[in-house]
Amino acid sequence: MSATRAGRNLTKSFLLVLGGSAVVAGAILTSFGLYRELASGGDTSVPSLASQHRTDPGGIYDRPLGVVRAPAATPEPVVAAVPEPPLPEAAYHIIIDKIGVNAAVFPYGVDANRVPEVPLNADDVAWYNFSAPPGTGSNAVFAAHVTWNGRAVFYDLKEVQIGDSIVLRGDNGTEIAYVVSDSFLVDPNDPNALSVMAPTPADVITIITCDGSFYRTSDPVFGGDYTNRRVVRATFSRLTQPVAAVGG
Image 1 (cartoon, helix red, strand yellow):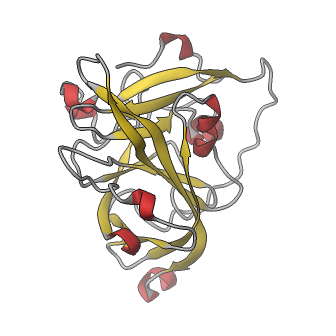
Image 2 (cartoon, rainbow, N blue to C red; image 1 turned 180 degrees about the vertical axis):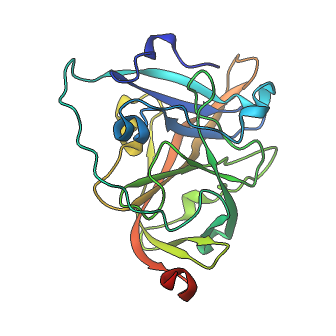
């Protein structure tokens, strides 16, 4: 499905998009309300690893839920300098020992219709490159499937509890550790759900997948959806870098 044409003026609107897959029963809550839209004054032309797969109907998971209008006139934003990301855009893993997750993370963006894209397998995790890079002081948003012809990487995400650890570990040994501060469900039809995607004044990560009950629909591609989305929020705990990285 494609994003609504009414949201073309990105400087005045945000679109909340929820992914639901019936055939593979995987889903994602995301948006192109877009950290970069706020930070760059409207430049949202970001590349995506999934673009080459958009001819595959199984790669289309997104449905628009509405548009939230910004004020008609706003002052020119003052954009603060963003710290150098401690991790590269790729070449790192997300590790959640509580549920046995050690998954590769890849950057994903939006397609030509400004619809967020998702991994096309059960194992990978998307970091959205319109959100903050991890470790740079704001909200880094991740998403992956709960099922994909069976269990997928975030199948047990609902078991994660406050106080559990989430680590982003780079191939070079850099680690950013976070502590889970919240885990909750949102209604995909609630426009307030968009707030989980917003930039934050503190360094946090937000992980999103499906939850609730699966139900059948007449959708020819998805065949069904989930009643809720699971959102896990974790706050920055520590940054550990190899000696060479610190000294170099």
